[in-house]
Image (cartoon, rainbow, N blue to C red; front, side):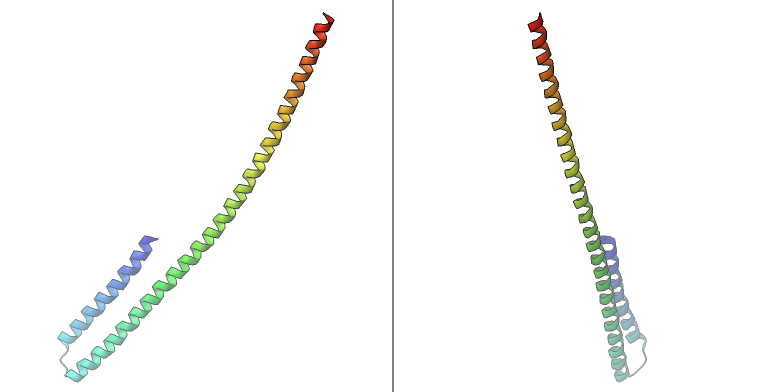
Length: 124
């Protein structure tokens, strides 16, 4: 994500530098009157402003798109976490029930074994 943000900054910096270099070259190379030069500067500055606004709008749109995508991913992950929590609770409850049943059977077996031992001892 930082690479994409860096690309937007680099694009904007290139846009600014390119505009300034272009304007400077136009002034140096132009064999025209002051009025024509001022008009050309005005036109170029408006063009530069428009390009800068387009760059900002494009960057804003990309940021909003990424934010929307991230929000969707977070929502999806929250759903997965909730599902896993529910499965974990179900597994825990089943394990508790199985363990409880095993303990009950074990107690019953021990009780029966004790009773048989008592019966055998009484017979002997």
